[in-house]
Image (cartoon, rainbow, N blue to C red; front, top):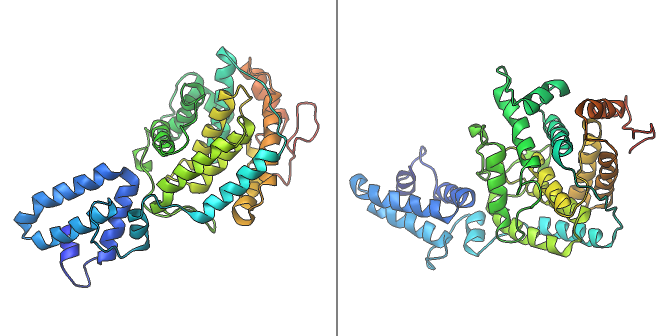
Length: 362
């Protein structure tokens, strides 16, 4: 397809720029190895197709993208950015700097907690339940309990059931539970492996594969696919300058959400990485319940659109306190306590999120 489109003209043919953009997408989603494989397959096809001239053009683009061919000319902005090295989203990096600077100075709680055995399992269930519910995978909490605690996949909703199990598995199993991906160049590779494990039963979600097209939430446009690798490399390295625990966990949560590297699962992944940092630091993990999710999103949006980090950080600090007050030893009691706080409700107009003592949580 690439050989035919780059070598011919006509209304039904894609342009050179289209070919280049597809190659950039392959490079960003699957790495240099995949692009080299495309080049090798094209070389094998060129002679039977009589497309030697097209092969030369294709090799020029691929070589330039990989930095091995200095004379080639790239026509797209994304292609030129890739050829320069590790292209980044400068606006996003500036925003990450604003957040990191705030987190270095603000006083945040360190709520010491290390759950073991049944308590750890129950907490991971609740984390998975809410993390999926707020993203649209909605079950009654007792249905979700059956899925997780008895590994009972609902025959009418097998993939949704595996979504619950996927987040639960990462929330309870090392290294996903207690070791965030290594900051720097290796961060994205770690995220890809987490995503592949979390959504391995959803092949249509491209588990472990980066997005090929720009994605949106409302009017917010996330990082361009061509800029994902470089932005994560620099953005995650900045996390080292942020204090460990809740501050660094909050930074990771926003970093993953703001880049939005995958077609699906970004919100769930952002919270898992945040909680891995909290567990690594010996702190209580954070659960964002249904009733508070809209407020949490509003705070993240203020940081995205106005570079205002205070609300986002304060929201996570509040949820750290809220999540730490429950007794996770018994699941029946835990569900009853959570229900009493209105956490299962969806309308912040009708309900307020409460603490166990009946006071307002947020």
